[in-house]
Length: 607
Image: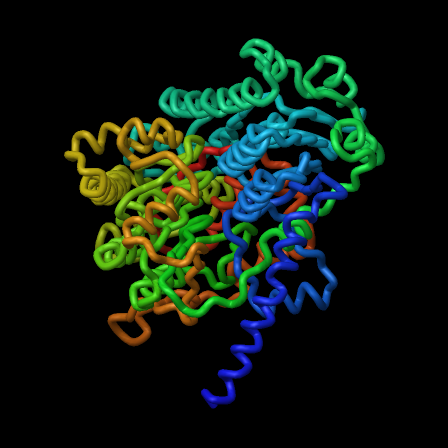
């Protein structure tokens, strides 16, 4: 067989060598006649395209569902690199739609567009309809900014809305029993208070100020607005596109049908340019690489979404949105440890946290892997509480200046309704031999001894968390406690406080991992996905009671039914912060019935 393969290999090699000059010629001249590239920026902002399972792809194709709109930062960087090198490239027309995700992705896109602009290329950005804070940050990189006359400039600054339900719960007869460690740990406040605490106001105001500063800085840098003028824009928004053009916040009020004439107006070399699609341009300039043989590479393990111990429905939560399930993540980390081709790992964290026990299991797997291969934690939009916990096992932490992180604290929260039972004249009793046998009985609630017991357990878990932070960040316990206490920090402030090692994004994390591994790895990192999750062995047959509740009786089944009917999305879209509410519901619905749940989770929004 070797003798048969050899001639074919030589033929392919000779053919590739023969057409190489043609490809090089085409690559260099592809924009000679048009001079412009057209790019659509819309959808979820991602570093690496997630792997799509075969069954998911088949279902999408059978139902003729379009591919979800995404912005892949890796491809955007490649596009900018090629346009900078291309002498025929005059500029880029960008159609800007709604961007998913948080501030980190928007800041990355802004930085890439500014890099292209500083290289002398023109960037014409057309806001498709409306622009909120993140879209304005991206749009500020334009040499010329346009939007429809009836579009809305909705960039009115950052906001962290609060919703407090104690009064409502009191009327119904519900009481949320909470034990918490950390003065700033505000997650339970929405159920136990009628207004925001002073500590929470302090930390939330600091985050809102930082995000507003980021918007103002981008307007200064890209649009040339002075500080007061940029702040005036935020004060006067929302405003229609026509008014925004008259006020000078955008350059022109232009409809989509008029964009080609605008490109003609600003084109310096070509009279009637016809912009080429960015995908086509990049395919010619940087064609896809063939399937590479197994070589040393940087692996990526993702911890995205609410961290949970179990998830019968997989990585998508019953309330929607991603979940970071302990079993598959630990399996991926173990697979990276065994795979000789994985030289180092980037732990990609985009999570507010969740279950303490799941976070601890992932932390242990990260730490074990880091003893053999370098693990670099990369924080995206949010890596708080349990999201920070799992990163304590890594060799170093890279975070964006606008990452929401910290929130080093623990709480437990159990709903009870004895007052409701009294109102409804529901009789109840309990037969027990030990005082804590019905500690978590929602019908009886907690007495003072029960509350003291719960607070003691939460404090023990907080001490464990604090010890991990102290060891990982090389602080003594007092120093760690001073920056912990459940306080949320931006990445910039966390770097100042010693909670992260450097400021940067995914690329910086990959380069640091490559350096720690001694170099000589493939350029592109690879997402690690174990074939079979390696579950934790049970100590006795039948000791694991998870899944004992039948699907028809489980809250997950009801949530999934509501989601499929469309009622769920209609309900969730009315909440002040849909993403936070979705994560909290996923945590509740993934909790094992009849048992307490200790959370390392932060509700701080990042919108």
